[in-house]
Image (cartoon, rainbow, N blue to C red; front, side):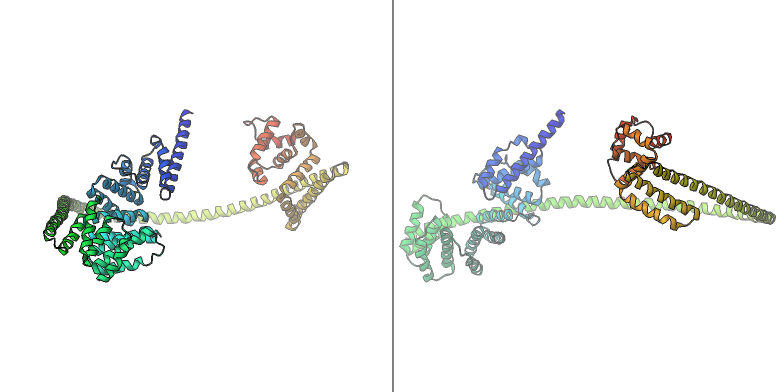
Length: 596
């Protein structure tokens, strides 16, 4: 009992935890704060299976990220990593790799973050979670931007923009297109820039921040590919919408390209004195022509040296990454070669084993064939001797066969005489059978006549019988008369009314059972009275009367078409005092009918 109670409690607890997890997942995108509250209310100790623990871990990591709570530890996500990476669905694996990469990013471990995102991209084709795929592409693209891999950066952001477009997430699509445009400008790919700008024209409902971002990229585009007039027109717009250090650097570059070096240097000085982080490489690259324009060649040279040093550092970093990638590939190739050598050894060992096995089979076959040939030769010799013996025996058998033929002919004649005798006996038995049938027919006719006469006398002698009883008796008399006529004349036409009456009456179960009881009440009143004295109801007496006409228990159940007929039988047994281990109720009823 305690075990059952514990199982029920555990089942209810598991159901409650599942509902809470379902609710948190449902609210995750629209209301991540509510999802985090629900997850914090769940007792982790009540999460039974590893699958539930993994689901909780993944949802909690999602909630923390969406509520801008950066975590650098894997203690929350680890159950999901342990379970989903091996046993999860493609969607579950994809989300796990994504949030694993996010945690690596929070830790500043960009290499492992990129590795996690790359693994996620490899299974993206199997996943149906388009939103997570897009987010993963954006995160991976951001890393490629930091690694100065602008081609990959552009490609990934364009893919993400296409997914966001399919999901009708216009703000996210716009953000991806602007990032892709920024990369295309950096690579000076004017054709790709024009294509992306054309896509941006379809965005009509823009907020002020989005408009400023587009204008900022338009200025960057003009600085690369536009004329001085186009740059001057965009300078006035950008001066009114400065929101970051990059905006000021863009203005400084625009002032430089339009010859306004004084303003360019003022803007660059503001970037230095503001104390906010800025793009050092971009600052130095703009400072060089701005200082040259004002005649500060020494400062320009100093900026140029610093720019070259920074550029060399970046190139060295990229080279180190390429070297590291080459080393990793080399290690992979070495492992592949090792596995190939091991596989080759296994293959050659298998081939050697197969060749050895084939040789053994050939030797065994040759030994078997040689042994078989010797046996065949000995068998042929034995057969030759046997044939000679059989030839001698055949001559003897021929003489014996001839005598047997004569004997068989005699037996055939004897068999024909016995057959004739049996036919005569069968004819006699047929005559006896017909005589017996005639005698049985006469006996049955006599029985029907007696029953019919008995019922007629009952009607004539008891005028006080109820009308329904008299009607039941009359119908039975007509039925008995039809049966007697059929038996006497051996004509089926007399039995047709009887067959019609039987079908009509038995089709109506209740009417037949009532008629049957009334007939017994008229012909065997003491029989019916006996059951009434034992407090049987009318329906129970009707049930008993079915046994009285000769039906068995299964036949009674089939006729009544009631599953409860067994319960009715048990109730009757109880009222009549018949133990369930005693005689069959049908036998009991028929004995009682004869007795009373």
